[in-house]
Amino acid sequence: MEAERFSIDGVGEWEVMVPPTVYPPKEDTMMLCNVISKLPSNPGSRAMEIGCGSGLVSIVLGTLGWEVTACDVNPYAVACTRGNLEANGLSGMARIFEADIGSDFSIPEDTDLIVWNLPYLEEDPVSSGILEKIEEAALADIADGGWGRVLLQILENYNTTLTENVTVILVMRTEPEGTSRVFDWEQNGWSWRSLGMERFGSEKIEAICFWRTGSGDEVTKLDSCKSTMDEAEELSGDGWQRVLSKRQVDGRGRRGNSWISEEGGLFATWILDFKLLETISPGIIQTSIGAVVSKVLGGNMKWPNDIVDEKGEKIGGVLVESSNKSKIRVGVGANRTGFVEGGVVGSGWEETIGQVDSSEVFLRIDREISSLFESKKMIPFPEVGFLAGLSWMELSRLLSKGAITSKDGQFYRPTGLKKSGGLELVGDEIKTGSEDLDEIQWIFPRD
Image (cartoon, rainbow, N blue to C red; front, side, top):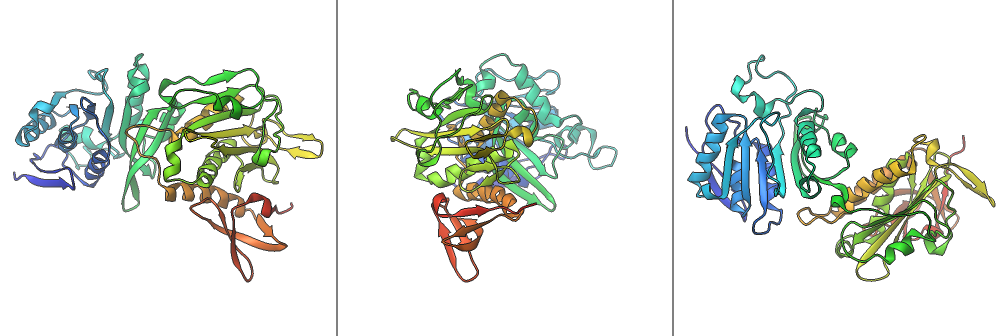
């Protein structure tokens, strides 16, 4: 058995011995190692690796200064990890033990980071002759939510601060979707962000980072207010701050226009980290949030900030403001039911997603906005290209139904988004653009 050499630029180079009964480092392992190498760590930060296998991930964590706890159900993997850590001068940086995650498993209370390259084979690898029995746990997933749901349930049963503060990075198969699903974590109040991706034929494997939405910070809830945007401006402190009101009597939209607030609707504002504006334009922040709000409400995004139904009637809207150099405020208003008032016709989410309470709609939108823009010390913000793609994908749903725009009496077909969030337009003989909603009109097909 010969040692294999692995390296990550700027981090280190290591020799790793892998016996036949232990899962060897492969492309998915290296993807996880590269993701970990980009995470900032502080002295004393503690990480736990589940399913340590050869120990390469634990070696990378130890090299980066993490205090590591690692486990595996395979005793040969435990011995292999210990030996490889010692051979690379890291034995004092880690505690390695044998454990079955389904029974004798526990997570240290002071853990900051959990990583696991989840098994994602769905066939029976033992009966098919692919693996020996001792290797099965390294590659084979289980039914009913997979190993990802097992870990989620363990964390949900911890009645401590661990669940509110820990960051979890899982390597998961997302195309075709495996038994372990991102959706299960979303349904239990966790936000997520993709940190890395590899394709192997028809399969897509991603390193998905999860954290509890808001990290336990409570929402500021009001019975009534003039405007949640104004209330949010008065908040002090840092962190994931949100204001939610049952009633809003003086809401506003773009350019100071009033927002009609029907009883039972959603009236909320989120505070985002001002550092976002160093790399992401306000326009892209607005369109990407519009995209996820549109998804939650089952509507269509009308550039740059409206959520409309199939007929173009408004369900809700997104407003982004920044009045000082410490906060970005994102206001989201949405109607629960349709209405006609003073010549204004509005739609509601009951016509698109059914009778969902406003509190549940808030939680769904909270998770979606958090997944994009909640500031977490270990997790980078999404790149502009990803946010522009997300925005364009949602806007394309409206365009695919025949919606077009007009500007200065000419018809134009939207063809893309600029990095500023502006709309690119193509007409019969000219290519142009728009940064201003008020200079274009949307035309919706009639039934």
